[in-house]
Image (cartoon, rainbow, N blue to C red):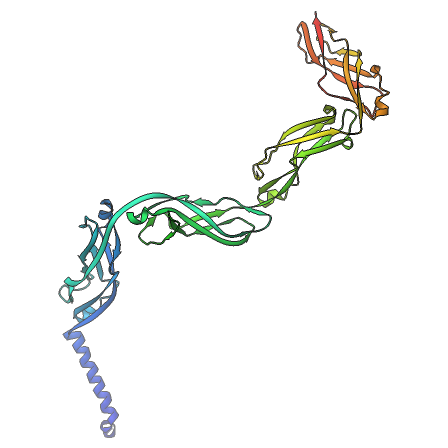
Length: 410
């Protein structure tokens, strides 16, 4: 035991324990004065609503935070951090444009006993602010595409939301701004783009304006860039045989023969042709032109812009002749009325192969007036008739607007 007490290590341990005990006593009982530096305490600007009401705004601020040197009792200093110490600057007293220097107001947390700490040079903490007049206006939002669209596809106009922005800021900056622009950069687009994009301000001279003090009603723009499929689609008609002619006997010309159509891929894949209408050859003598509107469903767009097609039908290689017939028949007379044909004969044009047309006789032609739709009225009326050609399969009647005059009496 005596050997242990005399050892050097024993005395070192005893010394450390005694020193530590004394340090604890000083810290906990005596609470000595000390100092601490608190770095990067952010500066909060208050009273900006008053500036706004005066049409003013802060455009420059000399510093954003402060480094504070605080002295006082140690048990109070250890409670201080950059998060619970506040630095504010009240700008509600500012009424004019220009540069202003204001004192910073420093507040310590309520947990600190009054008088136990002090901020060094408290009255010398100041900030310089630049105040300018605020102005506002609304600018258009535009889209710019930088890239390429895949072959067989077409880009439509940007759809932007919002399509305009309310902006405010220093008059000398806001008055330079022409519009806000979003930029989409993509290659070989073959489907519609949608997403949120940032925007830049473009001045009247075409340059880009970057400024943190110009405020906008939105921080970004929801952007849709529609990409649709596009191709040439043929125009078609249906030809109905009649008047001794079939579609093999005619030359059909459609002008334009096709148009360029765009639309979503699912609709374009279903579109093989654009049907204009039906042409009955019984209505065509030698040559005739028919006008048809070009109609598309609401999901498709006519990129060519042509809204009407002209279909020309020319009959080739057939012969025609006109025969006068008196073979007129009236059917379905109104009850109690007697009908008499005022028209005694009618000229009818027939068409077909030359050798067969030459064999047609007037007696083969029947003119039938059906009065089923005629009201029970007395007097003379012009009524439509149907023409029948008996015993001639390859020869037909040309025209469908034949009519005769009929007299109805009781």
